[in-house]
Amino acid sequence: MFDEKSEWRADQSVDARGLACPLPLLRAKVALNAMEPGQLLYLAATDAGSQRDIARFAELAGHDLLSAEEREGEFHYWLRKGGG
Image 1 (tube, one colour):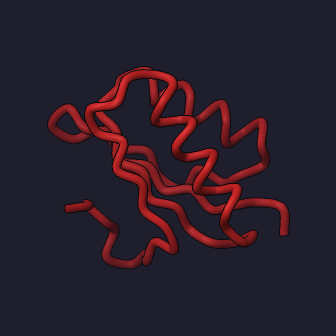
Image 2: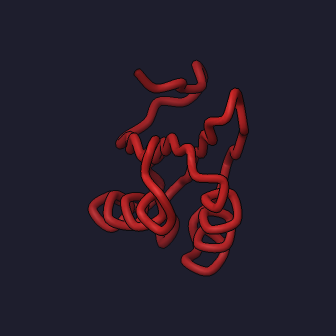
């Protein structure tokens, strides 16, 4: 179901494909709030606005955006929760 990097293992995955802005960002925020610092979140989205939203959110919230890729109209993000 998810396209996950083989060298990374997600502690939590969010499938926000088909959801319009701002839902992918909100789903990511909710997931990250429930996670421990240093854990990995994988997010899949189809909303093009998520590219800007996720990058800016990670920067402002102190999370590390490890990877952001677009493949066949889908956007795939890996974030490491900051704060620890």
